[in-house]
Image 1 (cartoon, rainbow, N blue to C red):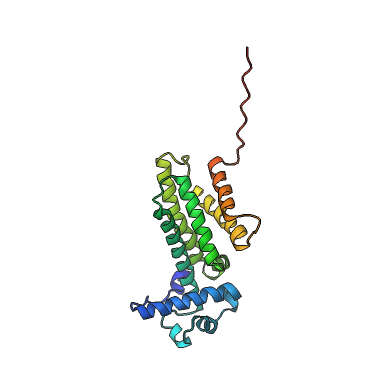
Image 2: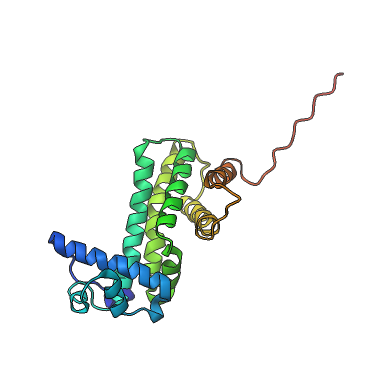
Length: 215
């Protein structure tokens, strides 16, 4: 039996009240798992944080592992939606602008969900399938967007999936350093400028042209 089926959640509620209760449990779980970690978290702590009776927990989730997996999946879905909405609002077509707005959306999401990093890191050991699904789902849409940009000549033709993971890695660590850890000496726009500047020009230093000698 694989990890995903073992930690499968119960059916999503159809009533608005049930949906609110389930969301309250997920929000509570985000705070608890982020604060004390998976090992020290308990269903009682989660339901207390959510303001929901312990008995009601089992109407929506089978176990602590199940709500953790559901939380990882939801965070991934919400992050992808936040990025897609930010990019779609301006109707951006230029790939560099899309990269910039996507990075800004990720920074905003990470700032709002400050336990995101800790939860995703734990997922590798709690439910590896959910951990991989989180990154693969992000990479899938990213890869398709890069392929489209390559066809339009906006991005150099190369392996789009490799590029997607490379760019995700940059965003992941930059977000950890300058959003999660914070840095009062650097404004967020400055950081975004540095990253997009790197994407535009890379590491290569453009040699200065020597003036032609007069013959």
